[in-house]
Amino acid sequence: MSILPVMILVSMLVVVIAGIAFFWAVEHDQFEDLQSPGFLPLIDDPVDDDESPPRARDAGSARGDEPGDRGPPAVR
Image: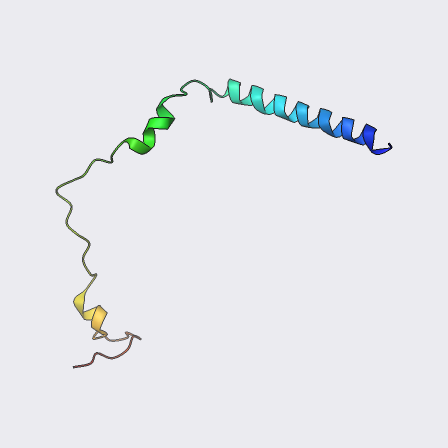
């Protein structure tokens, strides 16, 4: 029975923290727009046709031909 007063104090602390969190969310406009976040995953990103596919930085560096390159030597 000695745990009962401790549990009452802990539950009161949880209620106070939840109340503070709720009022903070209301003050910072967290409940202004409740519908659009649900649609965000459904919206497609715009596609730019001008973008080219990513290229290798340099064909020579991929083979290890550059001086100072510590990669494996090219097999020919």
